[in-house]
Image 1 (cartoon, helix red, strand yellow):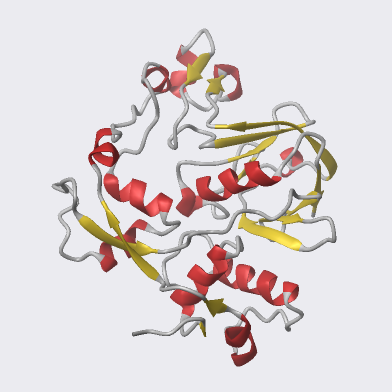
Image 2 (cartoon, helix red, strand yellow):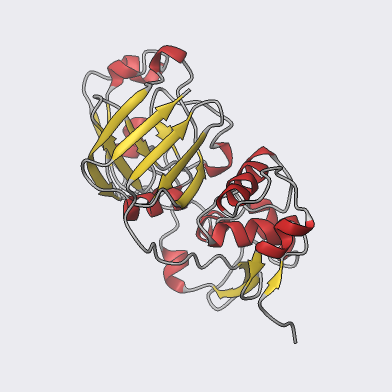
Length: 289
């Protein structure tokens, strides 16, 4: 019988332990990439350790697991019933009842903050095309704790492609990988303020904002895209006091921090959902180079 608490033993355990503390390494995959090292440096800084990004002895001693790394999830009929394909066109999306998960693998990966490839490795005997209710699946166990306070402010560092939320004592509440605007002139700097906080928003597709899209050029009016995890802004919208700018989720968590946006700040859906709990209208958001 494994005893807890105990220090982490490898990088996958470190990713799970960090995610439990709302210090996100991106999609949990057991690999040592820049987002995992950035998360580890944020943890080290918060615990007055040298921010090396290395899983050294002192960091292992501070980064502790209180419960097992993995848990068993039982697939339910409700899980399977909510799955539906997402139309490749904007017009098709606007006609759907919701933009739900397209596959059970996508659903389980997002809910466990894991990369789909890790879920596959943990369940080598599972036929993902024929999963039935009551099937048991092994996934990472994050079970992130409820925030103890609202954020006093948020800081976005463009060069690091990171977003951090801080408490009233400038204590770190959360660290997330973040995508930024592709064009430098669309990257706002300085102090912004939150003007609206919405969970599970719809999305208004304005063809005029996407001149590079052949479909957009063929449309004569705006389209309302229904809510869901595959909505273009994911499961959360935190609007800022610069028109058209906000912090939001995305249906492509593995691309966060690696791809660029039209101007908004993108987070993995699970991180955007947590930021909704931390944010409030009027909250300062400091965007730094």
